[in-house]
Image 1 (cartoon, rainbow, N blue to C red):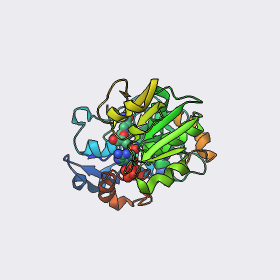
Image 2 (cartoon, rainbow, N blue to C red):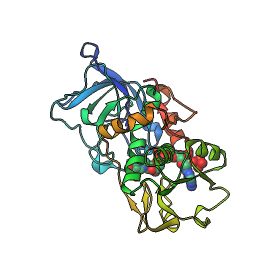
Image 3 (cartoon, rainbow, N blue to C red):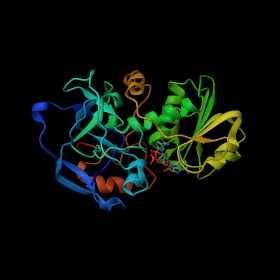
Image 4 (cartoon, rainbow, N blue to C red):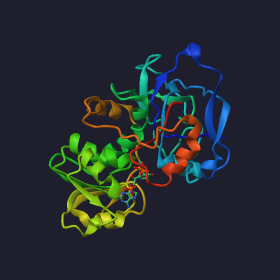
Length: 318
Ligand code: NDP
């Protein structure tokens, strides 16, 4: 039985030992399939923690496409039990934290996900929740912002470079636009979305907002130093990159010189990004259909899987 991931985000409070019950509510599944395989378990066992882990009381969690793919059975070969080890040093009881709870979302995921009242997480994957960001907003950040950051970094994004973000209104794309502009100092940011989301792209910092229902981005004249593909359009993405530039793709087929990577969770990267979140230079984007209450996880997954979410689909409160 799997406690349903959110593989990513578990803004939470480190649990107080006196309060931890033996059982908890958790969404779980016994069979792979669509969102209807999810069942609310009213008496799931609270996970035991390893020596380098923290038991966190989950307040909000985000749904990510990878969680739907895992629930559908696409990563069965790597579904694996809880890791253990080490000793926690930095965090204290009651600290408000957030983080992506699986170090590698496609390798060794946890049996204990964050669609549950408690989840056990390695300390190194957690960061202090940014001040001024609420739990629901924080839930949407870890997997998405770490992916946006790692993708831009691996693509060699740097001050003065231009970038095109394909899928700029989604969970990852909305943060890729903001990080490119605010953290990496991009000279020009372009992004794609459908008609209703064009103004949103601009509000996130896009200098050029391309409505993919009206224009083919690959037919535009400009070429970019970096193309960040959060849609799975690797074949077209390579047509708009400058010679010597980089095309990073999150999903779908890879066409050279494009490359794909899988995000790694890291609490210290979140700590480095916290000042941008605390100053409001980078803003979390929670899909306005949500946050969905804990009882509506099935509906929330169905919505995520329409592929039309704006920012992150978040479950809160838990
Ligand atoms: P979302 O579910 O948040 O993406 C939804 C967004 O995609 C919507 O806003 C939609 O906008 C936009 N979109 C859909 N089709 C197009 C299109 N043709 N052109 C432009 N925009 C489009 O997904 P995420 O951002 O969370 O993830 C994106 C992909 O990246 C997923 O496949 C995910 O599994 C993968 N991923 C991979 C990671 C890795 O480490 N390799 C890490 C994180 C994610 P509209 O409604 O306007 O179409």
